[in-house]
Length: 153
Image 1 (cartoon, rainbow, N blue to C red):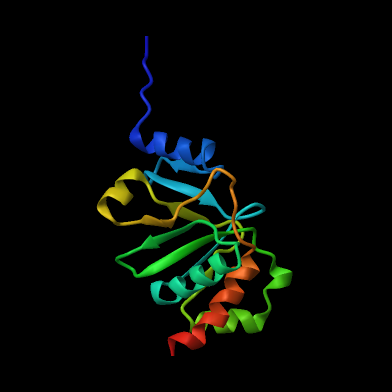
Image 2 (image 1 turned 90 degrees about the vertical axis):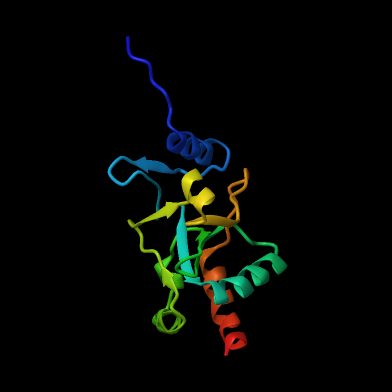
């Protein structure tokens, strides 16, 4: 008889799925928790110095969602609604490039913080996901980044 014991990684991933409503999966090759970018989720990653005022703007507008940090890389990732390429003009892409900000493309995957990441400080939540599964529209995060950029100069 085989007994299945759930690992800490699998428990953390299950919590994301059941409590936080994030359709996360454990990648058996890398041992990381992944979220697929596509029809339901998007992601925007930017330098911490830009992320802080962006989060303030989103909170002030009442639409802030999950954000996690990569402290060693000094970057933040905002989980958003899906990428809508019709709402993402070339001028915005060029401006985001100059701001060292990237938008995860449909079909890509992002790595969510695991329990081990959080304990080591490698990847951790700045604003954790909530049971309502709320996340801002991607264009709102992009607009907030573009509006916050002059404050950094």
